Image (cartoon, rainbow, N blue to C red; front, top):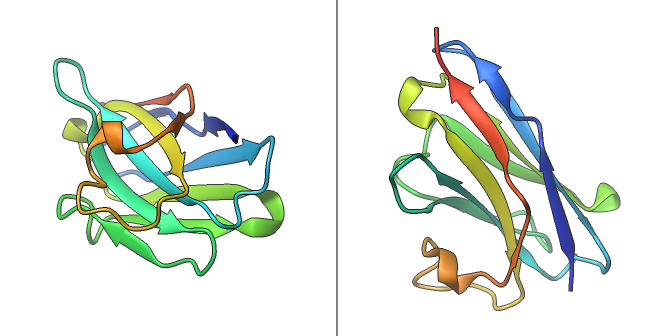
Length: 126
């Protein structure tokens, strides 16, 4: 099973941008799907997007469309999340997760994913 490590979080002002990374190790993830989730204080863990490592196709939650973009670099076993026009409500711990199942109707639910990173904190504040 893969091990996942997120990085790239930090403090950013409203309207700013941030690019998160999720590096997988332990086994190839070329046939996995990798998702991004976030969890804000007092809220449930929320699915943002997932991406196919085989073809790069991505699916986004409605809340993420237009501002967030997932991409992958298979040679580096890395998935990225480019976040633009960040707002205070984007403040959360951001996690990546992996699964081999393919598509799922419930992909946005955390319990559909088997392997998780430790998270990286994003704070959007003036």
